[in-house]
Length: 348
Image 1 (cartoon, rainbow, N blue to C red):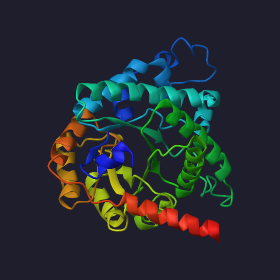
Image 2 (cartoon, helix red, strand yellow):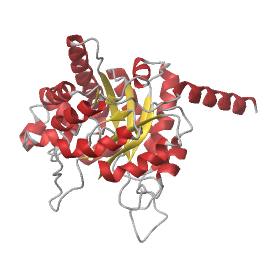
Image 3 (tube, rainbow, N blue to C red):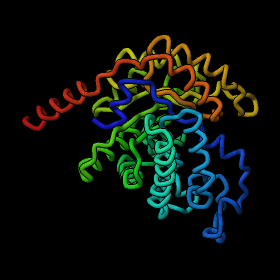
Image 4 (spheres, rainbow, N blue to C red):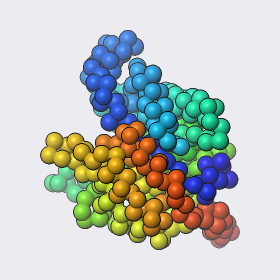
């Protein structure tokens, strides 16, 4: 059992907040995104936040540090779009390994530095693996419902490269996040499983889906329970939800997962729902007050923030979470069940 798994059974771990929200404060220009190395790149690079790990590494390190000092136990790498699929928009497919490796290295270095200041509170790094900008189970063309813009195999290869770079860069856990299409997530999990065997790695895995609207379903149409069942074929450190909804709106979906899984449960909602301008108005106090319901009901093991959240939000969440026990989990028992199931399949 890894160190993070041991700690998860004893306390609620705090995840960081939004990287994008913090980067917006820098107001980086096209030239800032390019830096000297990519000054002559043939397409616009503004908005490629993952690239900032190469061109503005100190800004990325500073953001990680702020979240750790706010109370986060885990920060996510700056790799939400770090696949060959997403990087194709910027003609940067060949840079994917470097982008992920360097992002992991930056976050791990900060984690080690902050842990050294307070060894009683170890800090961890989660390798962020976003959903990509394509979906494997739905057609982007309303006139051709059978068309798919991406295949399972293409996703598997893309995720495998990303995961390999993240692991070799030093992350402590892999986080398959903002899952709107479970088939995409299953490709990521399949790739991670392959990679763990090839690298002889036991790195823990987190999965976080996103409920897209008031229907209570993911974009590919699954309820919270269906999503859980679809990814429960391998042992996970945690499963939960992030993005799309605010803390209050996410509560019933967390309840549905918490009562049906032996994994840890994670939640990192947005700072409320976006306003008419697409901005998030919920302040740290209001958000933490809503998250209090998760704690009182014993729903979660990992808490953080998504869109619109800042170190102030994470500080408020960490402050209230320290007084509550984590939800009981049975990771070892689930691992034994999965192992037994696999042995049975092999024998047959």
